[in-house]
Image (tube, rainbow, N blue to C red; front, side, top):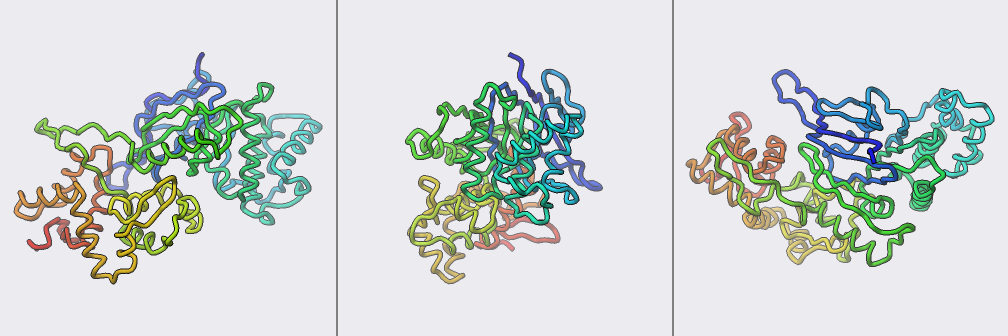
Length: 429
């Protein structure tokens, strides 16, 4: 059966300013979306999740590759696809009813049909009686419900959603997730296919039949995980919990396969097995996380919500603290290690010593120290970036270098001259 949506070799990049290199957002994405597919997109910040569904919806064109809908190239807004935006995207000069019915009027439906669809979808999202209210009078969660009602009212063949439940209270989000799952399972309903960006692993497992994990810098499909659990799904069952834990391990890179070693110009593979890049988190963020950790285990999702942080960004900080043996993360919880407790309560000089020791346990800093030693204690910025590109071909070297230098300077492992961009061992500077 021909897929409804097909992406072949899709890449997207933005041109750099002046002489800067282009920024690659997505690279070589291959993805087929069949009828009845319900797909959740998970991945770290900056991996291009939101960009990917905008490509699917035809809101932006790819730099390379093709996006097809029922076998035909997508040029402009894709027919049969509706979009729910994270930032609501409501027209402030229209009422709730006006926002929902505007696309219905453009479809040329009769007044009776428009009124029937308006009533049906207002009831579905719990906004009966708000027809004449303007967006400025609504809470964020209510605005999102209007956006969902507007997207569903046109009876789309495919629904694309960018973190649609992030602004909703728990009960409303749960109710709408249940309703969407019911709609997708109903053979009489035209909406049978859905792509949703989410930062919530449990939400992805509850709703999706396939979970696509994207890797970052540039964004690419890392894993395509089938979810065989039958509907309706119960989050407290062992099978559900097992899949949640597996995906959590993947997102924190415990199970994500390492990219293939990258050959250098001499043809030799320089990335040794087990060499990992450090997460994109600053030392300040790591210290802040540890200082907020309580004696009892805390749920990572809840901590991200309390801090108003995007979950994928929080995962980077959590993983960094875990690599330094300051926390552990059993079952989506974050727990301070004994070393983490000592770090939390220690004065700053002692914290620097602890991080110095922790970083020296990481293969990256061991390898960097060895390289600096063979180069008489220093290297140019260009040499440093070239080295990182060889070691970690899937990473953006400029971005990774920023975090390596930040960690290393704080702990006294790396020296850096901002004017010459020379990287050195502190003892040699």
